[in-house]
Image 1: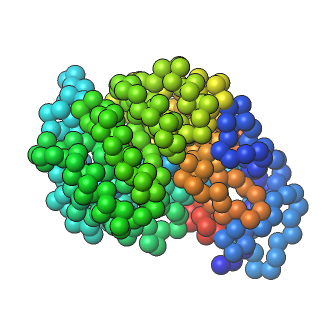
Image 2: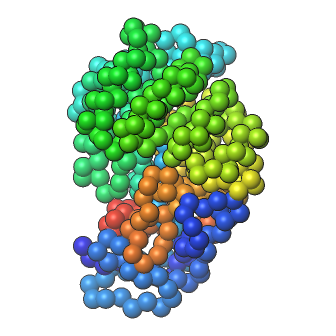
Image 3: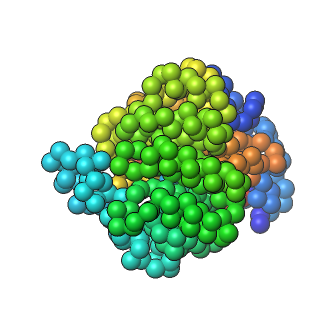
Length: 406
C-alpha cells in the first residue's frame, strides 16, 4: 500500500477532547488551514504544515479544500429487496405511515420481498448501495437486518450483510433488528422472536447489537423489555428505535438498561431529552425520515443544550428514508434539528464512530484509520448551507484512494 500525502488542506481534524462529544464540545472542529496529512500503511502517520513526502508517495494537492474524516453512517436498513414505490401515491392521497403499516404495507411489503430473495440477491443489492454510499463519502456504515422477521430470514439477511462487506474498502457494522414489526401471519410472533430467533442470532453472531422498533402497531414497551432483558443476559449491546410517532416510555427504559443508542426521538419531549442528555446513552436523530414521511423532526438543539451526545444518520431504507446521502442529512440537521454545521459534522463522524464502538476513526490524528474525504469546498460550513448535489471531491478509505480528486 503506497503512501499518500494530502497537501495544503483545511483540515477539520476534530482531534481534541473526549469521544463521544457532548453539548457545546460538538461545535469545535479544530480546523487547521494550510495543513498536510500523511497516510502510510492504511493509517494517518502525520498531520501538520510542510510535511516531507517519503519516496513513492502519491501527492494530492488539496488547494485549500476541506479535508475531514469520512462520514460514519450509524443507522441504516440498507439490506433489502423490492421497492415501495406504490406508497408514494398512497401518501400523496393522505395515508399515514402507520396507516400503511396497519394495512399490511410498509415494512411488511419489504418483508415479503426479502423472504422471496436469495442471500446472494440481498448481498448484491447491498453491495451496490455500499458502493454508492462510499462515493458519497461514507467510509463506515451500520446495516440492520429486520426485513426477514423469521429466524431463517433474519439469519439470511445478517449473512448477506457479512457477504457484502467482504471486498468493500470501508467498514460495515451489522445490527440484528429482529423486532422490527409484528408479523400478523405468525402466531405467538413475539414469543418466537425472543425464544427462537434471538438464541439463533446469538449463536451465529454473538457480539452483534440487538435492536427493536418500539411503536404503536409494532413492538410494545413491555415486549421490548422482555426481548432486551434476554439479549442483555446473552451479552449483546442494545439499540432501539423509540418515539418516532409516539412516546411510549422506551427512552427511559433505554437509559435504565444502559443502551448504546436510542434512535429517532421525533416525539420525545424536553424532559425526556434532558434525562437522555444526562445519561451515557447516545441519541441518534434521523431527519431524512421527517423529510420523507411527515415533516416532524427531533429537537437536536434541546439535546445538545442539555449537554447530551448526538449522532445523525441517514436511516437509509426503502420506505421512510430512501437516501444514502450523509451530506443531505447534514443540510437537514442545520435546518430542522437546530444544529450548526460543525455540530452536525461531529454528529456523523466522531460521535457516530463512538456509537458503533470504533475508537480508531472519526478524527484526523496520527495512528487513526485513514478514512478521509476532501470536499470541493474550502469552508466546511458549505455542507450546511448547500443541499442537493455532491460536495465530496475525493475519498480515501483505509488508506486506499477510492475516489480520486477530479
